Amino acid sequence: MSQITNIIELQYKLLEELKVTITQEKSALVEQSAELLLSLATTKAKLLDDLKMNDELLASHSELSLLTSDSVLSEKVNSAKKLLAECQQLNIENTSLIELNIASVKRFSQALQVSRNASSLTYNGKGKTSTISTLGNNLKA
Image 1 (cartoon, rainbow, N blue to C red):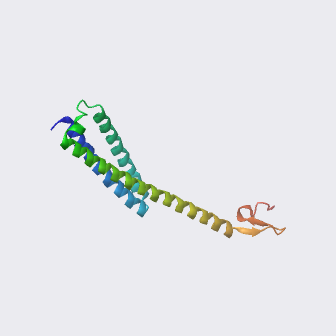
Image 2: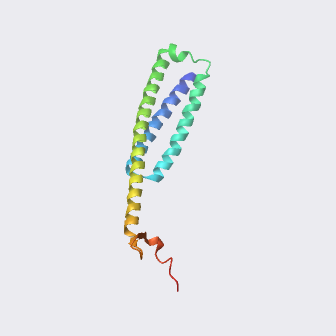
Image 3: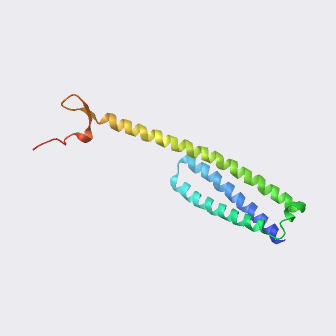
């Protein structure tokens, strides 16, 4: 096996690992498991770095032309490209889930603030609304 074949096969293996990681990331998002998400983010970043490094090796390889002229290598490249497209699609779906989760957390935060403000609402001596945080500040003993 030539060196360029090894690099292509390693790229494919890394892409398979990335797909598994992105799929696990989706599950962690659905389950809202922050610890697992952080762990998967680290794994995903390392895989992406490794993919980038291998891509640079391929781009500067002396036998680069074999990737298009050799039918076996060309098929391996096409398989890797298809797997990359799958990873990108899954990642887009995860991005949408992340955005939905962020929006949900914001709505929850706003609801908590409204609830806090509504339960602490009172009136001062002049009949104006006031919050509990100001109660007792004007006491003189």
